[in-house]
Image (cartoon, rainbow, N blue to C red; front, side, top):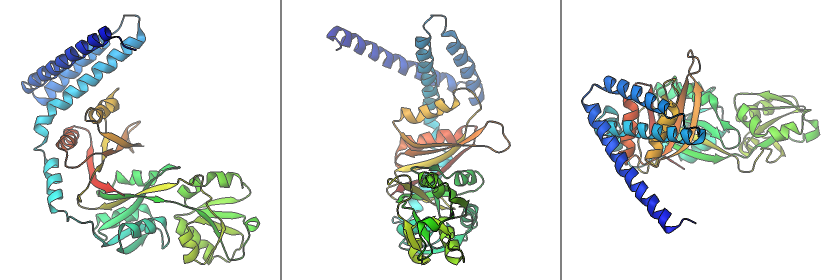
Length: 379
């Protein structure tokens, strides 16, 4: 228990630190205004590196580490604050405000929507929950969905992006780097996998199973317990069900949805073969232009960082300083660059928050690649 004298001393120190912190950041910002942005950046980087390196020799490694972390965070917040005043008038801020004004107040019930796979795919099930009257165009690959939206063939596209038990759909994340799109809505769909076979087929008759790689991963325990069954990867769970239905063989099965059992006239041989009953896949709705519908309280961005120590923590500290909760951080290697990565972040933030918009503008003004993917509501 903290004694009154100790608590008073802590309060006094915290007040002094608060005042010194404000004075330090204000002084640094005033100095930055007297130099070009590049000169200010170089001077700050040189000074900060020298100062951090000077925190040594005390013999208390743990305390030195804490001090270095404290000052790195302080320096990062100082840079963020110095950029805030000029960020609100940036091109990105104008683009976001324009999208808010021009986007209809109600998300559409009907639209031409691109989905990967065939009828019965989980993307189709998600699409029907998002749109009450969707005209669905099916594409063989995820890349086809991106291309259809980018070319204007479909207004929207529905794509799976991550699963609660098997992680990210890396194919989709990799394609994000090569296409221009925006996220306008997201939803989580509960996934219940079934083992489907031709009518009358028994479990002991099954020698091979077909499904998508994500579904295979989500059912890994079931497949491990039945290692005599050969596993075959196909483009989609619905495609797997269609293949079984169209085949003359009676010793194959598909891991697919109960909807596909009805659609393709298959029997459910085993129920709930996924690893967890709490099995959800998150789907995003993409479109070509930036649309921001009312109630948008989540945002996604994509950025690269300098290949320098502390660059990731410096960037994350900007979100922490505003009390913003990051719900997703995914990294994917950048092709042709050794050990450099593109980062994808999902953040809980209202698009109507001026602080959040300022932060997006600051990141957009950084020399590294940055893309604001969209602000949206998630069901």
